[in-house]
Length: 480
Ligand SMILES: [Zn+2]
Image (tube, rainbow, N blue to C red):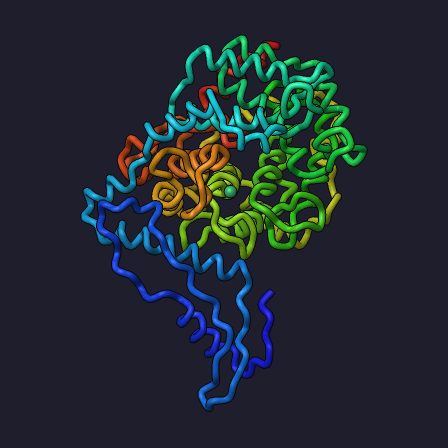
């Protein structure tokens, strides 16, 4: 909240204060300097001022977020200044994806993590997924021994009654179940795929289902859109999704769409990029996307792309590299939903539809082939071009999120980590492929920023697994 105290003429003074608070433009560093780590001093927040007639006034105070935003903008602007002052051939170097460094960082992480990682002890399947998926995006396959070690380790995380815990002997949890299954699908071997106990997994999911239809994360845990998505995504991927699991989920997710258009974790909470992806992807897998107000969802997400060219996760929050996936992916998904969007726009959907006015597919008791929804969706062509500035997003990821020694990060000034490496690369992939019309064509060079060798593997955006790996798993589980 901006607090205004005795402010007589807020607009001119605020404009002046912001102007004073920004540092003067500094000359760009030489092109040989590493653009990712250029230091930049934050502008100090102003404390007061005086009006034109000399009368003392108190100016609005900046919030912590506003000050942080200005720091980020200054750092990003400095990086972009270097880019735009370079010769075109130097630009190409700056815009290169540092594949070798990222591969080395990720491969090293799969073999050894330092003692500081003990805080992630309940997230060990996530670490496997983040690294193995990021490597798959780079078209890199770990050694067979490493893959077998991961399969063995995840088998030890699998609970005897179904689902996967954060580590061996830990309580099964839907988030780590999603991570474990996605990691195994990404490995893709028969050994990996057959290690998933689908019967027990189905029983675990039924236990996590609340009477409202929504899912809870774990026994006694929170009920939210993340739980719904992870359950539906996993169930769809391993072909155990049925009407029993699907019933009521769509109505819960619809109740989480906020007045802003994005989706919150639970009803009456704040719209958030992560939950917006989870909610929309789950609705598509349930074949109930038409229950959401898609035009307002698109509008909310599209306006989350900021002046830095990356996405923020919520309104008035800072840009963050991981939202390159969480926010860009919903927009990529809606490129295939334009028929519904058009119908909703024609019928003034949001004003006419009332919550709970139809129960949709989830109330049906007849056999529905849910696994087909994910398969058929990815085969559909895009019905229009990207609904965000995909080249600008690629620019943010390549210039501001890459770390010279390998790995990707949230924003300049932050450290790299495996989570951001996974989701920055996932976001880069969906951006590169977002301008394609045919689902099986290759992106044109003008749609891939930097050298064409930057092109990553395509993903199935509903599950965030590499597309080839998805098809292998789809075939495998279709015959089960
Ligand atoms: Zn992040």
